[in-house]
Length: 331
Image 1 (cartoon, rainbow, N blue to C red):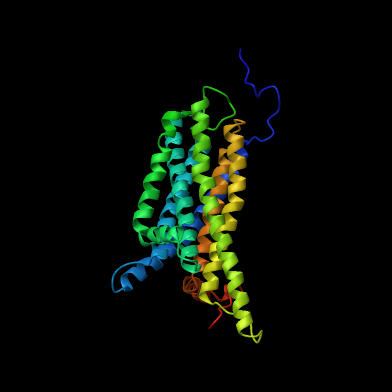
Image 2 (cartoon, rainbow, N blue to C red):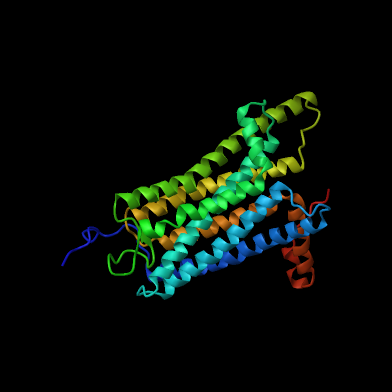
């Protein structure tokens, strides 16, 4: 009988059935938080859309709406995949798991690029640069937000759907180390496509975010120094809502970079080492969607204040929970 090339040594990273069950429960809890924050964003944006005289969202809110829709859809699909992974231990519906994975990868692509587009938008609006070809190119993209997001959505599915034909999905008949429905490269073409997807889906959006965050940070520091010099140090400079948006943008970049490092490592254990750690990848992606959604809510001052006010109003109905109220900052 042929032995797996990994059977000669004990795998360094392996998940037991209990580990997968714990990851499934945690993903369910994170899914509730993710849907809560994103539904709140969608409802507020819907209200703003109805109140607008032109019945049109501003570009930033439109991008945030797209991120929220992608985030909720991604979270639901990730929870469904983990449910299949826990229940289907003999890989009877592995094809369904493989299709879910392709949809998950597509929505991850859309969410990451939409978040990069949001930082790009804020970087263009907050940073004043001399007019040249690059800035004109930036302005042209920002003026066509709807078209840019449509291109991102189409590109997400166009780059991920071929994974089903290029790669081979695991159906339980090969190595016992893989997850049911996980799609693995079996030749050089498949491995090259996986690396292509990792670069275009994870690394390129990260580069855009980091570039925009560096630009924003540099011009923010310069602006604060100019403001301090003009006021002769009499009082500290205040940017108000602008500073809140800057903090939100930088926080999104930091959260993404941390997730990217963890995600690349777990993907390497799945693709190159053939470990059954795909559940960890799904769990870390769930953590990212939850944290990024909360950052988006906090970044909008009016959204955050209304959420805190609603939370305190809910607790006011139960005197025994009054100690859990959050102090509201009034301006």
